Amino acid sequence: MKLILKHLFCAVPVLLLTSCSNNSDSTIDEEKPSISVNYADGFPQACQTLERGKSYSFRAKVTDNVALASYSLNIHHNFDHHTHDDQGAQCKLGTIKEAVNPLLFIGNHTIENGATSYEINISVTIPDDIDPGDYHCAYSVTDQTGWQSRTSVDIKII
Image (cartoon, rainbow, N blue to C red; front, side):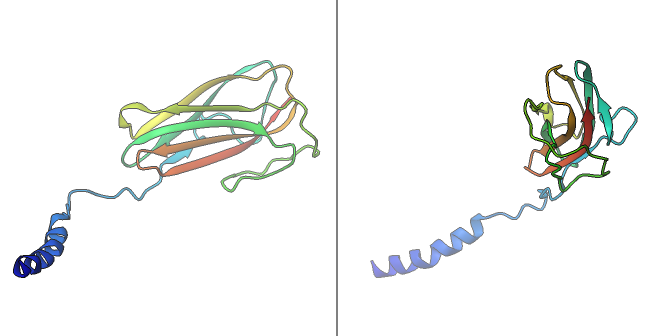
C-alpha cells in the first residue's frame, strides 16, 4: 500500500505538469482597439458647435487587430471644465456654471460577428430644453479580449 501511495505522490505532479499544453498557434491579444473621429465623415470634430432642436449623426471609425465587441457614445456637460485623459484639442470654454437641465446621452451597442473594423453611426437629436454650453462627446470601443480605447472631444451646444 505504501508503494502505491509513493508512486501516486510522484505521478500526480508529473501528470499535472504534462497535461498543460503550450499551443504555439494561439496568440495573446495585447493590442487595444483604435478609435478616430479625425476623418472626412467623423463627427463631431473638436470645438464644433451643435444647435438645440437639431439631429446629428455621430460618427467614428473603430478598428482592432483581432475582433471588435462593443462601442458606446456618451455626451455629457462640461460646465465644471473637467478634462479627460484622452482629449486632443483644448477649446475656449464658457464660464463655470451649475447644471440645471443638462443633456446626458449614453448609448451602448454590440458589434456582431467579430468585425475588425466598423463605423459608429448614431443619430442623436439635441433636445430644445437642455442647458446650452460646454459638453464632451466621448466615444469608447472594446475588443473581444476586453481591451478598451476612448476618445473625447469638446463641443458646444447653443
